[in-house]
Image (cartoon, rainbow, N blue to C red):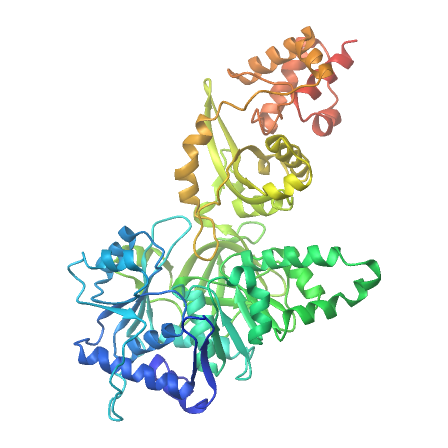
Length: 622
């Protein structure tokens, strides 16, 4: 029989897996190893302390900690005491932490004593009654008669504040039923057994990590392993050391692993290539399954891993859905998709277009109770009892779900064309010189007309460019983008870009915070004029100073109403922002001014820079 109580599932797990190891902390300063029975005893004692300290049913208790052995202990102790867990990212600015504490009404807080600046800040908040620091001092063991405070299925279990990509955080109310039903859905897939062990590296204050690397393993009898904070540099080493069999992560992590792996494989002597799978297996130790979620996994990464014998499954979900909605089947994963709905979850595509693309809607016992203190927002999130995810996608003929983008991130051009930024970003990320990219819709005034185009904020891979002898970074990216643009229809091409040197703002799971990118860079984009001095060869300098070049440039300026200087190597698309319609106007102006006829094929495939136009005109006017 299914239980919709976190406490009942915990008690059942402690009985069934009593002597098995539940959690193990590998951090050198806090090494700990607890069986399920020992963990349950500590949870019960901490819950007894909370109740004895005045915590009542439905009180809010904040948990502001990095991943460590005490995290599951505190999480379940709060639940056992009948209170509501409010997980918070310790790296948030203090102002945001204060806002969440105030909005949630949390009175008790768990925090590390090492976080001195946060502790100092918390002392300034009048609402806080008690701050409990880690490591714990000894707590009195609870008597056998102390039982968990009864939790009804619809009782609030977790109040989790999201960190969205398009808006400010909001409080999501998840009940015991929401979380337990999602565990049950995952459990029915039979992906894990009590013989498995799992690394816990994703931040537990996020619902994806909370469900997949805390609730699922503890209720399934797995061993959870916490590793030191240097895991990004030593991940494969820790996988071997701990003999972990399951690794749950985000696309960014798997892409980095893929990049290092492929580099080593490509460096193997040809005679050893047939043994690649053996080398990979030895490198990864006991790992038998990767699971990726939180954002879209690069299809090439998924295909290469599967080809090399590494089972990787991509899933999909949201905080509001507790979170897992879909997962690729173990036996038939499909790279590029986020799988099929998990048991007890229904998926529907709303308002489909002619290609079957529309908004993904979900229904099931895992769907949130609502947004905290916001009935209007809660009401707007549902349509005829279906939760509207805000994600745009489609379901293929085999029932696999494909995500195209976010509805709030769709760029709608004046032509009526819908642009999904993630699709464009994936295309330009094919080039290894691009480390990160965010595509924005830009509306710029040019004379009396308004120019609408796609603009990219780009973080180049400076090491890659250096290794390949590229000294002019902007020119290198421009040339590579020009080549990639030829594979796209005109309205999907990037028509301008801004180079940055720091990473783009992202959520904890690696999704780009587009509203932050827009706020941070749009004024820079609209104000960009200076592009540095153009370096020309003697031959190109002579061409630029010729009468025909001056006349062509004057023609371009007049046709496109450009006031700023035009240079010989300016890209028609990326520097001048010429889209397909503007190109027609430009071609007509050139033909009229020079009394020539330009071949359509030459224009579409051979003209990408101002220099190309000049040379074409020069050839036709001999």
